[in-house]
Image 1: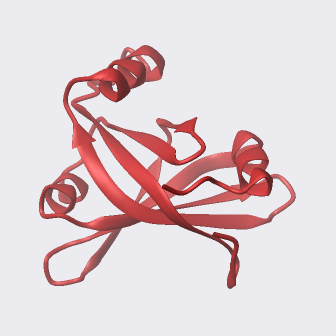
Image 2: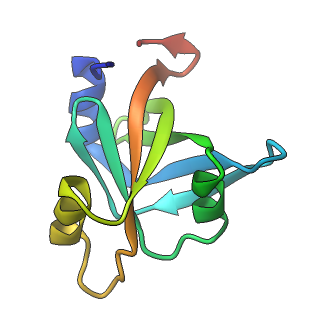
Length: 125
């Protein structure tokens, strides 16, 4: 069980713009998307609303690991890597439905379980 470093948790709360969510397919070909409907659920869980996933959904269903990259207003970048789960019901899904904008479908909640954290090349966790 990983706990996000305090520096990263605070940076997440003050991030600028969308995050970048990356998965890979069964041939290790990466796929990156801008994720605007994303929330830190707790210090080890990032939730991304599956509103319009296509390749991303296929990659998750195939067992892809993933990463979230974000930047702060000061221009400091952080990357979190880990395993991904997909929830179509349960507490994490219900939480996502509460904050996901009503105009988006919210088909499922993609859950990134944080296992590694970086700031540039420096490994923080």
